[in-house]
Every structure is written in structure tokens, then in C-alpha cells.
Length: 190
Ligand SMILES: [Fe+2]
Ligand SMILES: [Fe+2]
Image (cartoon, rainbow, N blue to C red; front, side, top):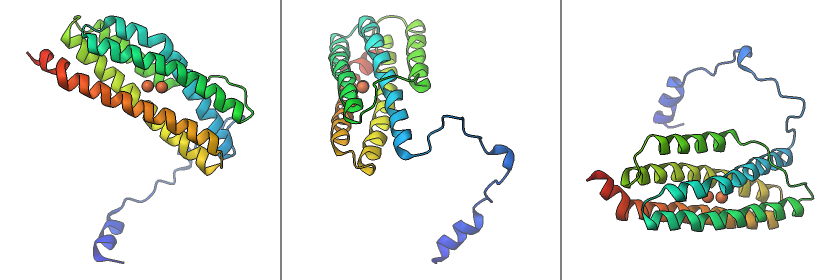
């Protein structure tokens, strides 16, 4: 062991073994990785469906034509992603059903709040981009994990489809960056 490693180890705080902090699993808790995988698919299926409903409102509130069309294009892609998830459920022999995604519900609520708290124009647009990028980053994290789970479970066809969606979410994040850098942030700062 290197000296630096030794020093880090010595400084590391003791792991808290307080039994009161241990969480009891619910009756229907996932016992296998496959169960967690299916649960996570239901979570993102709920999230994508919620986005199909929410994105038109974001686009309608955008003043920049570039931002509105970026969101509208992603809305169409999102509808395809819902269908793709249904195909994945079918591949896995599971029923396509959603389970409320608390994280997406929270992100969408925050997006609504930003609309209320900003005047239409460049400032609201900057807020819409911020909210949209938080959503994309949540999706990137989710699909990255889902694709990794699928690969680990040997579900290669599902992994391929999940990786496809992951690429679309990354692309959407890049496009939002471009809109922000090219126009909205500059005008909002004026
Ligand atoms: Fe999506
Ligand atoms: Fe997305």
C-alpha cells in the first residue's frame, strides 16, 4: 500500500453501523436485478409519457423560434421513445405499464414554477432551457443505467434499443446547449 493510500484510509470516517438507519424492504421489493430493471423501465415509461404531455407547454412558452422548434422536435422523438419502450417491454415478455417517477414529477413541477417566475422573452427562455436540460440529464442517467442493466442481464436487443434512446437524449442536451449559447443566454444577459 502506498503511503498516500494509507493516509486516506486512516482519515476515512468509520462506517455508521447504526441499525436504526437500515431500511426494511417493502413486500414487493425487487429481489433480483431483473426485477429492478423492470421497475426502472416502468419508472422511465411513466416519465416519457409525462413528457409527451408537458413538452408542448414548454414549446408554447418559448419566445425563441429555435428553442420552440428544438423542443417540438424532441417532443416527436419522445413519442417514438414511448413506443420503443413498449417494444422493449414486449421483448422482455412484460406488460408495458408506468409507475410514477417522483424525480420526473419533481422536475416538471420545477419547470412549471420557472414559467410562473419569469417574464416571457429571453429570460423565460433561459429558464425553459435550464429546466429542459435537468430533464435531459435525468433521462441520460436513467437510460445509461438501463442499458447497463440490460447488458448485464444478457438482454442485448433491449440494450441496443435503450442505447439508441440514450443517444437521442444526449443529442437533445447538445442542441439545447447550442440554443443557449447561440442566442438565449446572450439576450437574457443584456
Ligand atoms: Fe426521452
Ligand atoms: Fe429527452
